Image 1 (cartoon, rainbow, N blue to C red):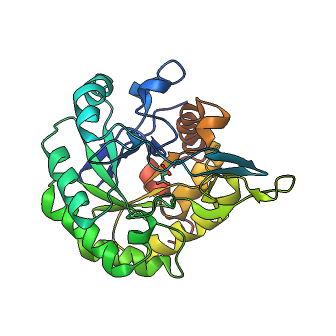
Image 2: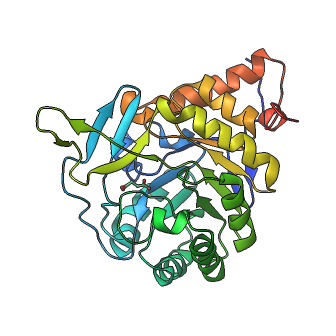
Length: 305
Ligand code: SIN
């Protein structure tokens, strides 16, 4: 296999290959270090982090579906101070860019957490989670309303000079409109998409399966929706996109690159096989070689260019 360039640049974030991890599916990275060579990832995107620790939602918080999973975790995390003190220094040893997914219950929360993380040299970029469907305040409630989405992203923009990626919710009528709002608010890039709101019912108990009733659907079931959104948005805005939603193999990832994503995240795929990210990165390189490309950037958006 001859050497191809796999480095991608996303508005100030440089990744040695276009593969990162879906927030919440890979812990902080450390949990996966026995299965994945963390130095070989393009970036590590960590679990949603909030100002204060959160215990998460009542269980059950996961339900398997025919082609994916429903989750209603509720942003369980130890809070930003614990993350910075105990987790970040350990993940930073792998010298792979760290993208911190941030969430808040108010615009002020988003501002405060971004100014705290702005001081951390080991944080390469922030992913603004305005799309979590499992929390009462903030999350998807912000990301499905153009004004609150704008306010949260703009507040983060004012509080950090690091690259910021808005993680958008697919639970909207017009994803292009929300992408344009994010661009106007100062986002440097987009993460597309978070989970689709869904539910399951236990027919024996005649009750919802998830303790929180509804949850976010991820996995192969949502890939066509995610791909369609990346395809539409990449033609409408001038922002790099981290494409995600049901990527479980390198072929899926190549589809997202062809649709216009500059990088991809493997999420639910990590639960199927913990080394999916590695197989995806190797497969993309092999595809480029087999098809006579010397640079991954040559194939970004080829499906519509
Ligand atoms: C969760 O913690 O509930 C999932 C996070 C997300 O969907 O953004």
